[in-house]
Length: 416
Image (cartoon, rainbow, N blue to C red; front, side, top):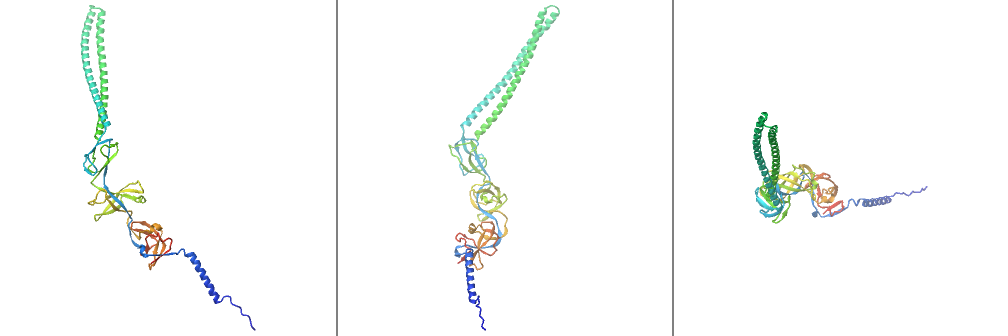
């Protein structure tokens, strides 16, 4: 008995067709989802820079421009104002301490000096007159007392004689009383004259002391004014090089105005400007070096100026040993300024890639060197030659370190 044969649903042909459809769908999804992430770009190998990641000693330093300056600089400031009558020396001259550089004139100071000098002479005359009057008063007192003493002796003799005569009832009581009163009056007059002369003498002595004090102050004042007049002659305070004089004959200058500079030629220092980014890392004692006439010269940071101007601050560096021969004031040299001690690290050469990626990723070549793929990395410190690699790269790997500006957001570079 025949039985019906059921037709199979999954034939080989249907299975093959289904697999093909699934493969097509999977490929389409893959292309849509992942094609953007793995986009590639063909790049000419000769137009890029490829550097090797190495392990070595990382030496943290920056290169700054140093300018040779004198170890000490003395500013010439006008102590007194006036106009320039003579200019005896110009910038560039070698001077010795005390050499005359400028002569100023100030009519007001001269007039004040003459008036004060006249005042002092008046005080001297008054003082001498007071002293002379005191001496004259003493002589007058002596003369007056001498005359009174003579009169007193005469009055005493008359009084004593009349006292005897009165006792003998020869003269009247009225006559006796008259001579007694005359005698006592002369004695009282003598005491009053002595007291008056004492007062006059004390008053004269007080006046003399006051005049002497005023005269002393006037002399000191006159001495200071004389010194001010001498300050109109501007002289070199130290020996050295007169590097500049910023005034000309006939110019009017004010007290305290800077008019020049003298450099001490007994030593030099290096003045460098550093980017404000490093201001927290620069301090006295840091070392540096520069090459001059075929030799390396060491420097040490001696002073840091905290003021920031136009994004930079200044640092003074002194020579650790002898100053190299032939170096001159104003010379500019590149100085290698150390920021830390050398240490072992993985090193990546510097390049233009950093400005495009911020150091967050790079293109790393595969083992065959035919392509370079994006890879996230982490960089640390930097010097003019290398970056310190913290993670993401291993020694021996090759990295594209030139600019990525023309690569867009491609994930893969095909090197040709």
